[in-house]
Image 1 (cartoon, rainbow, N blue to C red):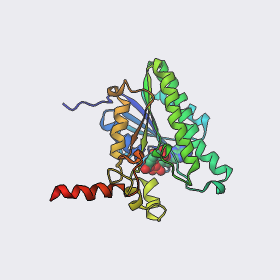
Image 2: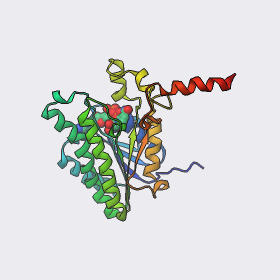
Image 3: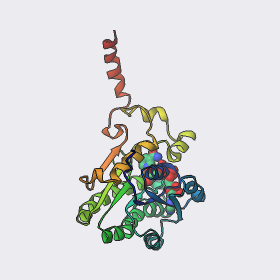
Image 4: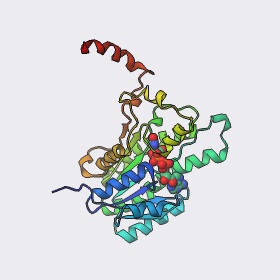
Length: 267
Ligand SMILES: NC(=O)c1ccc[n+]([C@@H]2O[C@H](COP(=O)([O-])OP(=O)(O)OC[C@H]3O[C@@H](n4cnc5c(N)ncnc54)[C@H](O)[C@@H]3O)[C@@H](O)[C@H]2O)c1
């Protein structure tokens, strides 16, 4: 029999209307969870509907702290328990630092940094009362690998890592497990759009990728499942880099040297 690792669990996935969050929602449902997608996207209801009866959509602009707390109260009332929170909503903002406006900076901080903290507080409150839960924060490889021209993104993702460490340490005694995933380059709109319009160069990105390819949403979703289920219960406050080795920091085209030498073995 197929063992479902999240059977009976209720999960809230922010930013789950598309991309990585959607992939996580899909995987969680296949593992037996009921999932609430919390997103601002207009196509959210259809996205949830496509996932079947165990998915629901909760429309929210996560920049509002009050709305986050209302969401947690509403969902706790509706479902009776909240077992998993995935903080996945996020935006990237490629603008050189001298050109950044206050509004742009505040916006990224509100979505990427404050919203995960408030969601942790709001949903964590119910997790504590029920004796535990799992929180998975979606950080970024850019919390370690500096991507110039993306200062608000980098600093907010760095803050997500520290949030994970802070709460991992503070809430372990409540049975609330807090960890994070720092994805590398995953094929979603966030990456495909700049690749299409020439803002990013696939060849250059892959020249510093030991695995030599972009990541798949399913690869992040399976790690998010592991971190949500009890198989990972001894992992506390950790940030796991799922990036094909990119954050190891190899030199551009550095692998060519090994490839050349290793050719000798083929002869
Ligand atoms: N794609 C990548 O390569 C990559 C790499 C590292 C980290 N990440 C992180 O993974 C997460 C998901 O990225 P993605 O590639 O799936 O991006 P995406 O743009 O496809 O999805 C982001 C989701 O967040 C939602 N969202 C944005 N602002 C919101 C708000 N104010 N209120 C509610 N929802 C809001 C969007 O509507 C969208 O559904 C982000 O936190 C991103 O920083 C992505």
